[in-house]
Amino acid sequence: TKVPSITLNNGVTMPQLGFGVWQVPDDEARTTVGTALEAGYRSIDTAAVYENEKGTGEAVAASGLPREELFVTTKLWNSEQGRDATLRAFDASLGRLGLDYVDLYLIHWPMPAKDLYVETYKALEEIAAEGRAKAVGVSNFLPEHLERLIGETSVVPAVNQIELHPQLQQAAAREAHARYGIATEAWSPLGQGRGLLEVPTVVAVAQKHGRSPAQVVLRWHLQLGNVVIPKSVTPSRIAENIDVFGFELDADDLAALAALDEGRRLGPDPAVFNMA
Ligand code: NAD
Image 1 (spheres, helix red, strand yellow):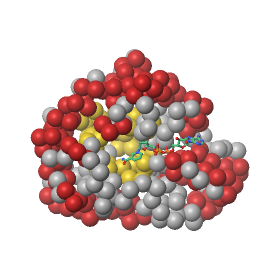
Image 2 (spheres, rainbow, N blue to C red):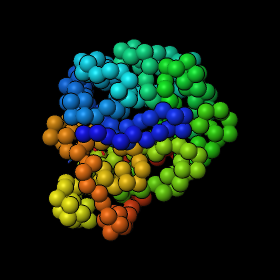
Image 3 (spheres, rainbow, N blue to C red):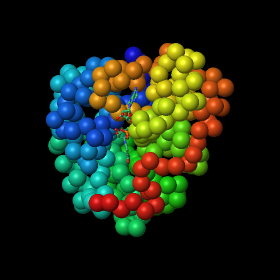
């Protein structure tokens, strides 16, 4: 399977579909990420707080794939915000991954009450200037946080990775990203497999195309222009989730799915989430 790429605002290309590894234990990450790489995934989304950078890095090394064909994302955890802690945390992530650069480094949450995200982002700019991250960006930033960041720093984030799926369509965030030239990356793109895949509209569109509900939801994201990083530890689902480039949703399908927006988060509210 050939996954199309999008071009980020600094010219770096990123596969539009990648593999998320949240909740994959470190000792299973090597096998699970290995399965994904064999299935054709070339982009992997991990984070320091997932505690599986080591297993992820081992899978990358064991794959024998040329480094430049892979796109590895990791994220700075909340407890490490602030310039010096960020630089140390980045080094530690690279060490666990066994890499000398990552493709994308993200601030995991803004934690506005701590008021450290601008300083933290400037440390990411240093990392990018050294070429140790090919692109830098953020996750869970609200439009107001992006606006402040863009006003006070020099590198527009390449990506904002946010919770996004048909039941949380994030129109305002997507509009802000388009305005600033920031790519929208959807986390929990399948709604964590909790309910969304049984919604009658999703099931009906899936039946119409002879595809699975998960494939329909991933197609919806791709046709909207989102980057997606579905997660599974089941080999058949890992393969199914990347087999989404041989069909297209039509205008009726897209309209039916657009009606599923409930504006309800599965995860925390970035305005108040401060867990360290
Ligand atoms: P997801 O929406 O990718 O759903 C994953 C779950 O859906 C699986 O555990 C499984 O139960 C089910 N599933 C997967 N494929 C399926 C299929 N083909 N058919 C039926 N069920 C299927 O949820 P996620 O793991 O929360 O999100 C994906 C990735 O996003 C994470 O692994 C992580 O990399 C990233 N993420 C980032 C943040 C953040 O704050 N930046 C937060 C959550 C997740």
